Image 1: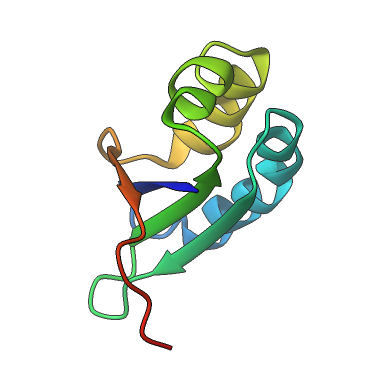
Image 2: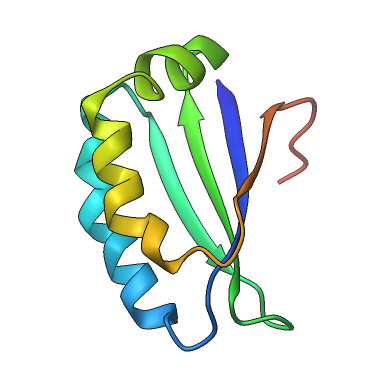
Length: 98
C-alpha cells in the first residue's frame, strides 16, 4: 500500500467546518479506490492537519483520483478552508514495530 500524506494548514477558526468537510468527502475517496483515510490534527498547531490516504498504487492517487470529478468535489468541500496549498508526499511502509 502507498500512503499519501498531505500536510494541510487551514484558516484559524475553521477547524470544525474543515473536519466536517473531510468526513463528508470520505465517500469520494473510497469511490475512486482509496483503501483508508485518516485525519490528524497537530496538538501544538491546531490549524495544521495531516491527512493520510491509503492507495494501492501512486497512480491511483495521482491519476485515477486527481483526474476525477471526485477530486474536484473534494477541493470544493475542503478547499475553502485551506490557508495555503497542501504539501503532499507518498510513502511506503518499511517497518512497523507494533
